[in-house]
Length: 270
Image 1 (cartoon, rainbow, N blue to C red):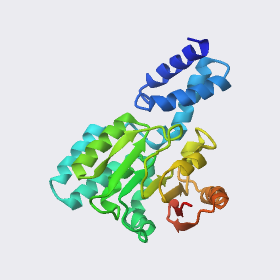
Image 2 (tube, rainbow, N blue to C red):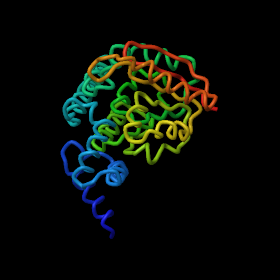
Image 3 (cartoon, rainbow, N blue to C red):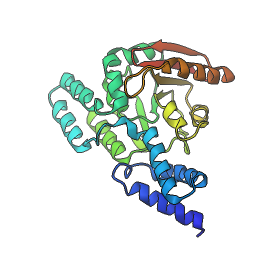
């Protein structure tokens, strides 16, 4: 084993040994760690830089650790009391993750507007999903639609699989580093919601590689219209200009939707 291999193993062990990152996909930690080791003067500096990248890619979206056991218990109790209370419980759990919390004020209209013109999909991919699969009751889909969700946190994925079983959702949630291993199974629609800026923190070319690799004719892609602190700073215009260049280079048409905290595009690939 080379010194670089030894250092990489030590970096991965150090990152996964911390409470904040212990549930992160080891594949992603190893990929980010290898890059940082090549760019940093010491193992300690590479470990710090790896944690910082992982924070930007996903850790920044939870204000505090989510108790998934408690969240599942709340959903189970609500499920026994009818659809309305179950939806209220789902909203309460989604509020514990910044990305889905920002969408809650427009949740009743977000999917109804963006997906209204589509034929019912048989399979939907939710890429870097966060807690978005809990929005299942709001998605205009058939009960038989298969939903496949991907994210980097093992504890979150286990919770989502339990939620799928509870809500009667066909499909599964899977731990996956979508930068190094983009989804390769065919689908009718892929949700890529507020994901591309996070992937850029890992690799600047990752967003375009992911969108090219996804085997779905339609993509619902969105961007945040404000920072995590609530500041706008021209973010939506910046993201749109960059995304338009990507679309134009591929000849992909897109329909634009504007919401208070989010800018969305329904993209037709090819």
